[in-house]
Amino acid sequence: MDRPLLTARLEQKLLLSASAQSYHLEFSIDELSHFDFTAGQFISCAAVDDRGKTQTRAYSIASAPRANQFDLCINRVENGFFSNLLCDLEPGQTVQFHGPHGVFTLRQPLTDSIFIATGTGIAPIRGFVEWLFPESGEDRSQGRPIWLVYGTRHETGLYYQKYFEKVAAERHNFRYLSTLSRPRDGWKGLRGYVQNHVAEIVTERAREHTEPVVAVAEPMGFDIHAYICGLNKMVSANRDKLKELGWQRKQIIFERYD
Image 1: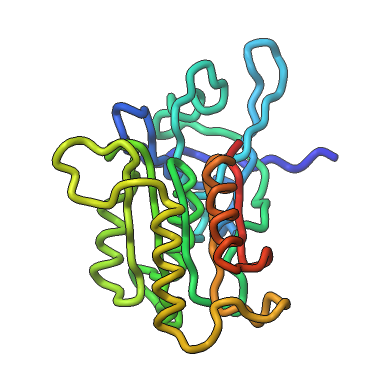
Image 2: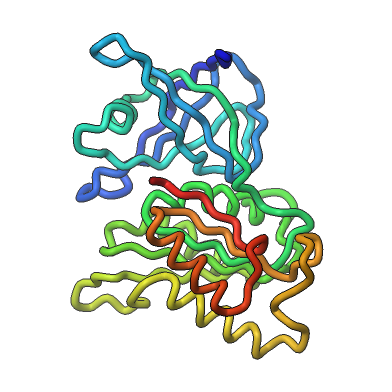
């Protein structure tokens, strides 16, 4: 069934990483005064390629809802049709899309949460953080401890670093941990893979709480959730680690990018 297409107009384009050719793109929607979605969802872009074939590609929204706007976080991919199309857009140009779609969203009622991401998997996580800790308006985190563990190979792949550091400095219940698997000399942050640092958080939290970390079988009773977004290998590594630590399947929410 054909889905109605909307038109997104690029308003602003920011280079996140020159080496990775990664961009932050801010769009507005011509037909709408408000674009209703839930932080963590995605859109599907559509365009006709050089052979006259319609191509579609899903992209997580890298922002919380605001009026008729949304953001994307895009990496240029060699020989990639849609990634290059989006990265080559200039302000004022448009792309068509349908959505929102997806269920990679914060579970309610809100629990303590660990956000885990690598690369552009940070996109929906940025939406979570914007929604929980808006610059203006009521804090929606309810004082719940929120951890963000963000990993990549090199420092240039840590997108939105200053934003997350700012939120962590201003909000007592938000902790931001960035880790590199191939750091340069002089890197003073964490090293290694995200699942190792997630395991440390879970183990430490278990020591601090008298109630069990593993709760009852129904989601509404869970005391903590993990939200994982990135490539399949990373997602699987974190799911396996959490299960080893006694977590139940429904406590682990994930979205794969391959």
